[in-house]
Image 1 (cartoon, rainbow over the protein chains, first blue to last red):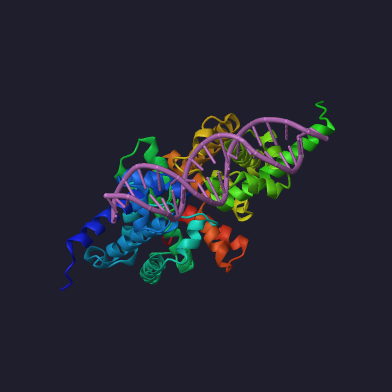
Image 2 (cartoon, rainbow over the protein chains, first blue to last red):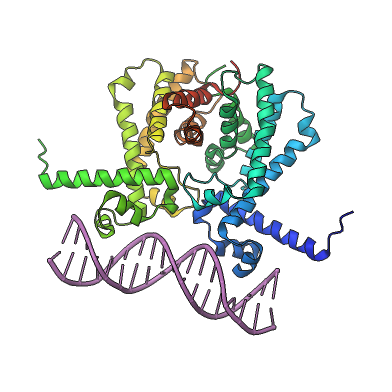
Length: 202
Length: 202
DNA sequence: GTCTATAGCCAGATAGAC
DNA sequence: GTCTATCTGGCTATAGAC
């Protein structure tokens, strides 16, 4: 059995704390506006210490984005998710999960088209692996939901996939949150509804 | 009749060129990653000259965002739009217009929650006026569409409004464009469909 | 108003002691 | 690995000649 030293555990805990902070700051201000000084201050360590853990700002952000995807994957692998018999309900569940992460201020924004972050992500193994793993699992659920007649079969599966990725970061969630008029559950259910059922009357 | 001097016309043309460049760069890289040097180079003038037209980077971006909204307003005021008898079709038309602007690379991204740009926008008269004017017109169309039974009446009108604003910048448009597998019209119609009809089968 | 040149600042990254 | 102190580059903004 893999014995993990106390030192390594401490390291892991610290890195988790760092990545938490980065997630929050990425969600709040985006990659470019987030400064490494802020991250260090938020974690409560010196900036130079941060650079011992992550060799650049880009790789710091990439680690954070990879972890969100790994958590999504953990959710997808959970019993509760896989036991859901209808594929449509599985898709709703993962989308709901993503919106809850966003409401908790832990969903980093999608990187802009042209950004040093984007370039770094395309070379980041853990991130790319997580993206393709999540895409594959969701792709299966999408195709199944289409076979079951629940998701519109005329939509190419990749359109559905991209839409779900985009809705995970849907700015409408933050807009509704900032009005203060809706509680979290209401926000999630409303945005989920507009995503799956559209704005038109059914 | 208002006589406009040749000088003023030249000025206007130049400022339009500047704002075009800013729009493109804002769409491509976002406010923080865009540099004033790039804008100047893109327009083909010196950076100091830019600052004669716009006193700060924030106000430069704000002018660009205000102009997009003013163009949206011009579209809303056009005969073709207003003669459309059904409110739902008017909402579809303005959303389609926004997606075409985005495909043309001229739709600036929504500012992040916490950003110097956001602060500047909240003090920018032309921007705020345009936002509230657009919101008012769309709000009327939304309520009417709900009365006509076309837009889901259970959705608060502001949720519909925010959703339309968000879809104007929907990253799915750029994602589909970057695959190169779809022509512009197909992209617009597909994303419009997911917005109004949802992902589920009807 | 346009330019060249530069001031001033701030953020990413590093040196080097402990 | 952690810190303090510092380097370095690039960015916003301006000075000042034309």
